[in-house]
Length: 262
Ligand code: NAP
Image (cartoon, rainbow, N blue to C red):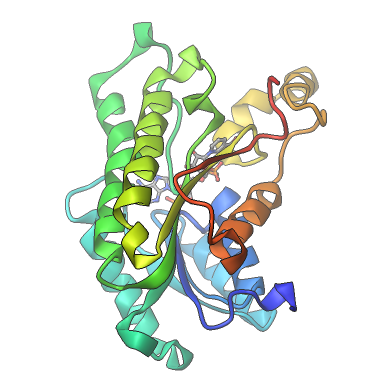
């Protein structure tokens, strides 16, 4: 089989896909043949660039703009998503569905240690990192074809002690628990639900943590491969989960941290 086209005929929605890890995921799923909804919150120009680049390479994509972590966020995402799918001739809504793969990638970090915790920041972590993915799955289900995929981007922080950002870690722990519950709940429809937990990946999210060569080297040294991860390192794992090859895998947390802190 030509693995580059493993997702031909599939429709994906990747949240937070204008930059960082989400961008890498959107590009990879499009390369594998999926029509990709490139969701963004604030980064409209970046998301339009991702869509344009995917199209230039012969792939198919459309933008989906909606802020997460605010009332009505999931409805707004699917309003934009449905409009985008309608505009794509090849989307066709075969089998009565319009979505095969939901990647809950968008997230915020930076909550700080408990001594500096702020209730508003805590609420925002939960709203963006846990509540929004929950209601995005709820909104996705009526649209999702049987045999679909839900892939949640968590973090090493939910499995390793991360006191420097405890509310962030807690929000990712909630996401991991959602994966477990939904894996069993959705199995009857052949929908798999899995988590990918990145370690340190070179994106805007941790730019401050690698501001000096020494800090950068220290971050790289956390991985047994002695380098900071790239978005494509995570995207390739997501591509496997999105494909039919992962059909016997559900309810799992896949560590994509390059062996961090083994
Ligand atoms: P990033 O570069 O900071 O990008 C964050 C993405 O999330 C952006 O696309 C952003 O979209 C979107 N987003 C954030 N808040 C949003 C909101 N309120 N509404 C809509 N979209 C929102 O981060 P990243 O490193 O790519 O992280 C992606 C995921 O991986 C996150 O869930 C993060 O927790 C997880 N992760 C990252 C690392 C790492 O080292 N980088 C490690 C472990 C886990 P806009 O810019 O359009 O608003």
